[in-house]
Amino acid sequence: MIGNKIILVTGAGGSIGSELCRQIAELGPRHLVITDHSEFLLYLLDTELREKYPHVNISTRIMSVRDNVRISAIFDEFRPDGVFHAAALKHVPLMEANPLEAIKTNLLGTRFLADAAVKHETANFVMISTDKAVNPTSVMGATKRAAEAYCQSLDVGPQKTRFKTVRFGNVLGSNGSVVPRFQEQIQSGGPITVTHPDIVRFFMTIPEAVRLVLNAAAHYTDSSEGARGKIMVLDMGEPVRIVDLAERMIQLAGLRPNIDVDIAFTGLRPGEKLYEELFDPSEIQEKHPGSVYFIASPRIIDAGLLHKTLSALETAVARGDQARAIELLHHIVPEYGQDDIGTTDTPKPVKRGRSLDRPVESPR
Image (tube, rainbow, N blue to C red):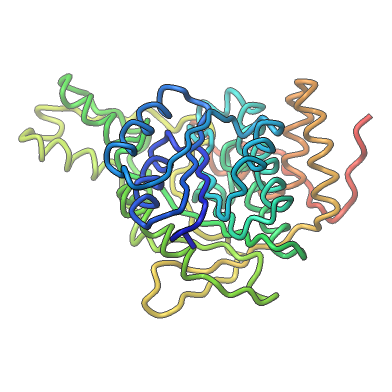
């Protein structure tokens, strides 16, 4: 899938994207195209890759996945054989406060990129997704689930591009993640802040997550009609209680939890869940013996209605109509908005969206 191929990576400057580029460079691509909207992160990665992998042909392009014209120009220039789509806005509370930005990047950006891959007959398109897309309670999770749905709808179509979505949980040490934050808090004398005593998360290291993404995407080569539209879910073992992680990190620093360093519970933040799920109960799951991933079969959304809804959503975003945009997001992801999660322990009723089994009104 990678050896002697032209590979394009989006979000290359991020934690997952940069590790993807390192591991892809090890596998001998004919040409590695790294893209990101951050000039600084892209500069750092470009410098690192050229020093470590002088034999790899590397091209560096500043690109936002929101910019359809720029995406088309880069696809025209390089004609990639494979795309690894890691660009995303991922911080849940921040996206709750900026929902249109999450929609622009995570959903519409994925749509622009996926359409370019189909147009240019890219062989493989691998989308990096998240466990937060399962029964999402946040805008971030809902936009990632909608992006999954869009890639699914294309994968079951007649085009040559094969779309593979890989879903996994939190990665240790990624930008803005809990471990670096806890380290900073321990060094400053505490307290360590944990949102809830019962909150749990799935964790992997960054190199491990990327290695499994590459393995899953390469191994799942079944192109039969029945195998299309599936989602690969990495086997992440058992979830970890965040308070246990905090206590262990204090101990590893040679200190005593709640004696030398306090642990303070601050309450769930907007959009947060107590626990994440790797599968929706309605998703059919299968795992091949010895494999590193499960195969999930989520519902496939009607492609015509999905395209119509996305067009209306794009219009709402262009107008800055946040309420309408979120309403349309509910149409694509009707399970978005569980009522057992909130910023307090008290359940909050959340208006659910309707499914795409009915037409959506055209934008006025």
